[in-house]
Every structure is written in structure tokens, then in C-alpha cells.
Picture 1 (cartoon, one colour):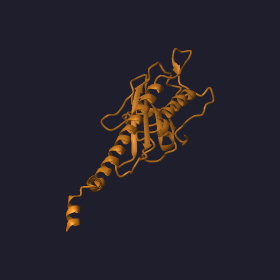
Picture 2 (cartoon, rainbow, N blue to C red; picture 1 turned 90 degrees about the horizontal axis):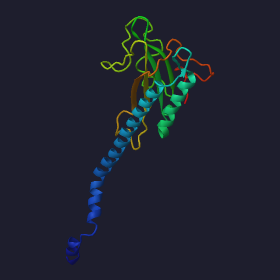
Picture 3 (tube, rainbow, N blue to C red; picture 1 turned 60 degrees about the vertical axis):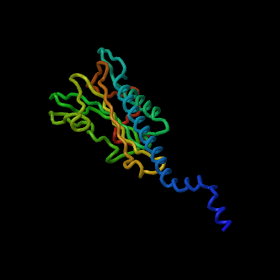
Picture 4 (cartoon, helix red, strand yellow; picture 1 turned 180 degrees about the horizontal axis):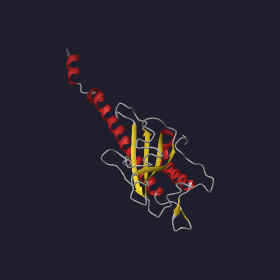
Length: 218
């Protein structure tokens, strides 16, 4: 009886017991918070890369003799390389795909995709562009622009819009059960700043690699 009374008064190990009982609830909540924070941060980084790429693509070019700027393959390669570097440890072109499109106005007054350049190993549904390929809308007015239904981006007359789409497969820190889908997408668009020579699309006087969308490279 004396030993039982002593045991009843003993409070040693109470904190450890409480911790053991609460651990199955606290641990998953903590891991969920860490995973969701990383998920949100990754999406934010992706959107920033897309925005900067669209902005840079709208500015590059070399002056021609016609008071216009000519866009070269080397210029396109440079801005895409900038996106790779900005992505850093995300390694966007290994875990995803970048699509840069030039949305313009065709001779009928409709929207069309004059050219596209891509980078990234990923391919197939969810990785290739969801909004069109090179040549879409070349004639007529049925092609309404690029982007989600109800929020289509369109190019103004005599100019172009640089439309960027990045598809990326998110790698969870803990488990994909916390985030559901691991396929992230970010888009951005910018109107070309200068008087760009649109008729020549992308020239290649420097014999640079052409990142056409039939290729899948990092």
C-alpha cells in the first residue's frame, strides 16, 4: 500500500506522457505547415520568373536600319537563360517546361501565334502549352488569344505580346498527400516595348541554337 501511495503522488514523467499523447496530432500539423509554406513559396518564385521573362522578352532586340528592332535567336536564348538562372535550385527546365510565345495580329485582324520558343525536358499534357502552338490563328478571327477562358490576352494592332507559360512539377518536402496536385503553372504577358520588326519573326544571323518547341532540352 505504501508503494501504491508513493506511486500515486509521483508526477515525474507527466510532461513526457503529455508530449507522447499529443505528438500524433502536433507532428502532422507541423509538417503540413512546413509543406504548404514551401508550396506557396515555390508558386511565388515561379510567377516571378514568368513575369521577369515576359518583361525581358518584350525589351530585347537589336536596332535595324528601318528604325525598328530585330529579334534574334541569341536574344531569345539570353532571356530564357536568365529565367533558368533566376529559378536557381528549382531547376525549372529539368522539372518543367518554359514556353515563350509571340502573340500578334494577323492580316485578317484576328489573333495568332507567330512563333514560339521552349526550354525544358518535360513534355505532354500539363507541360506543353495549354493555349496554342505556332501558327494557331494565322488566318481568320476564330483564335481569340491566349490564356484562360474569360481572361484571354490579346495583342494590339502593329505590335506583339510576349506570352510566357511555365509548367513545373513540384517536389514535396514531406509528402504529396499534403498538397494534392504537384503540377504548378504560371503565366505572364507583356506588350513589346519598342517598334519591333514583326514580319521577320526571329532571325538567326549569329547562328545560335533555335529553341523551337519540338526540342526538349535543359
